[in-house]
Length: 251
Image 1 (cartoon, rainbow, N blue to C red):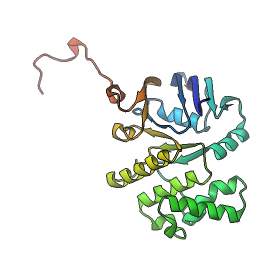
Image 2 (image 1 turned 90 degrees about the vertical axis):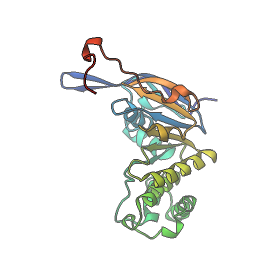
Image 3 (image 1 turned 90 degrees about the horizontal axis):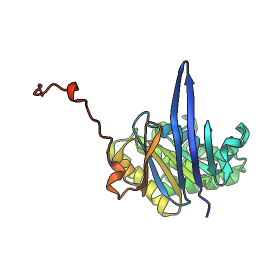
């Protein structure tokens, strides 16, 4: 079976004046249908670059990215927009809900862009809200909901198009710890129901909720394996030159 997501020696290079930044440096990995993967790394590690490429928001400078067997790097802007709408469901840290639309209308938005008839949009959006426990809030505005409830709405919006991949970018970043755990439980439940989930995070404890971790550092992949492996969450070890610390110095 072909992988759902495949990076083949992917690099992303940005020219910033006289400086060349390699945000992703020859990264390769495969993600199969039904997996729950965490891509983890600190700021500058390349995880946001990988997220943008996986989400068809950007294309590699070098190498190849395949989504569902399609070479994304060969697509034009219209084709990228179409594959995003058909195959990807996005969950953002800041929810990105439209404030003047009801919860139900927010969830319907991806279906509207896909040209789904209004009656079908309504049915599918209500079903998605039911899955996240918010059907009774369908007429509310986003401002009338808590942060956790707004994030659940964004999860419903991600689900409504029956995407091949749910791409969650720091989904608990704007939430308190208790509400964040509730959101992670929803993602785990979605995975158990057969959804493919790719979670982008800088937090080891959040990454540990996935089955597999891809850890990045300085644009390179430094680990790819199960969360049960002790090496999955080992942080980089920094060494200092002998003369950089004065012996017997103040603590």
